[in-house]
Amino acid sequence: MTTPPITAGIPLIPLWVKVCYTLFVSTLVPVYWWHYGPANFLWASDVALLLGLVGFWLESSLLVSMMAVMVVIADSLWVLDFVGRLLFGPESLGFTKGTNYMFIADTPLFVRLFSLFHAAMPPLLLWSIYRLGYHRRALMAQILFSWVMLPISYLVSEPEKNINWIYGFGAQPQQWLPEPLYVLFLMVFFPLVLFLPTHLLLRYLVSRWAKGHEAD
Image (cartoon, rainbow, N blue to C red; front, side, top):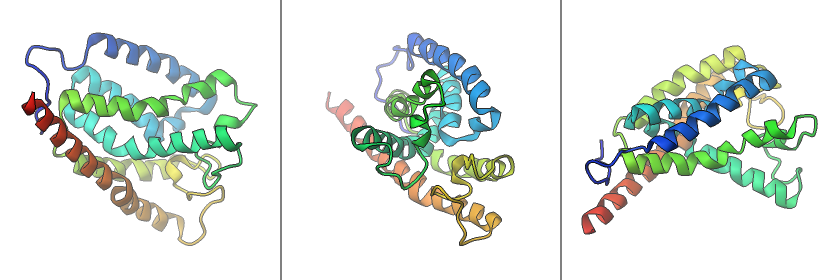
């Protein structure tokens, strides 16, 4: 684990951050449970939100590093897609259903606003890694975790919900592989396309932070 560039004696994660995070999650969970149902919490971003909270309270470098590996790229793409739709219309960048739900008028606005946590998660997780350090086992731990989460998502999801894109990346279910084989494909695809690049980026950033701290 890389040592965080923080002066000894200073709390790694301030209490006020933990409390604010907890209050937000405590409000979001019953709202999401009521509107989307419990299976919705299997989405990677929701998992990262919940386990990130645990990581903050435990000040666990491994947990926050795993969650960063899982969602920094995915949530950043969510933000780009959402901003693009805001600027150019809901039908723009419509290659997935990623942010379609943010423009469904039947969903109460306050429920949709909760989803803006996607924009906060990448900087929040990067900041937590700056405070706690990046755990060297985060990549492998997250891959193993995803190999449990994806099959469970397949068992509890349905094409309309398409939790974690378990039925395909587009608006319609994919047809080029049998469903179980497609799940296996995702178990390889996500680690290679999302997790590994994030892992390399985080290692680079932490090394830069450490050099900056040494220069100070």
